[in-house]
Image (tube, rainbow, N blue to C red; front, side):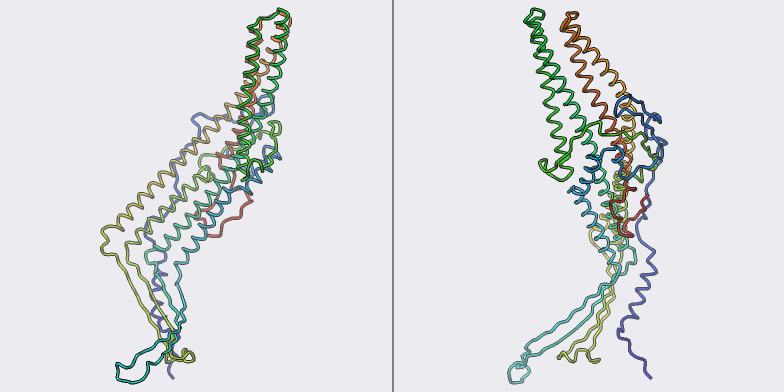
Length: 506
């Protein structure tokens, strides 16, 4: 008995090259990527940082404990105890066009990775066709009209590129690293948005406080002008005193104008964070008393910053991408082996298409080796190596900038706590001095120059105190942002598809 013929005779011939490709699957040209590391410092600041800041008896003046190695919550903005701020951040994260664009870029990169993964598999296509044609037979000496001929065919075509050198797998790795990069770009966008909203809310509260102080001071200056005017009418004050007080009132009114402008611009920025026009934002009013200063703040060890900062992780992913691209460039200089096969049938009548006598098949093994290209592929490989070295240098620069950022914020956190205590002392003293000078001037005990000096001192001290209070909140926000924002503890974003992240998240 004869053996039954195989339906696809070319499969045994295709099996050997495919088996060879599988055996070589562990081999890939080009350097393997390893997560970069540096000899990090034992601390980020030049001088050791105290574990506890100074304190002042005013809202926002609480002492803060710096907890080394403590973790940061994913929704760190809730630590300030402001329901308005929490709601504003949630709205911004939901509606911001910046987040929407970054999320779309991530999804695009993930789909491109899956698309590139398909190159490891055979490509199969099917073709069905019908052809009608006239074949003139007069040239054969056969009289009569040219007959019409019909032909039907159906064919399956298979194409498979053997990844002998790992170039296809390097290309997939390159796309995966690109997806990593977009993932951390999205996290950076979240961090920039949330810290921007929080900082703008604190700035708006600070400006509102400064405006309130300045308006109160203008009212005081107006009362002083009334007093000086009355004394001038009674002969107790000179025309110079009256003109000086008028100028002082006008100066106080002048200081108010830029504060109003800055507050309006800050609120407009908050509306932009929400993805809305200023007239559509319906923003709440913020007051510094509505915020609570977190009394315990984490301080990550330097090595943890490498895993926590989205900008460092994005730079790492970019380096990974350029490293994999070097493998692709090397593989392009080596032989490219492709298998092409086809199986089908053709007949003059559609009912005869699947007759055993009308079957056909083909198998083509093709190897292409670049021989002469005037050095194009060689220089492309060298250019890609330079791009990899550039990405490595940019990663190191990003790490250095991150250490600098954290050190700057920690220094501000410590020094601004001391500055607030001094500002509070100065403001209390300036208020007492102005009250005494005003009373003594009414009784004729001091000249108007003493009152004017006390007014200017009080004005400066009052505004400085509000700015110093706001600085404590702003420094804490900046520290949370500098430490990475706790994105690894946030659960408001679904994880990426399995296998898309080339390096594990902490």
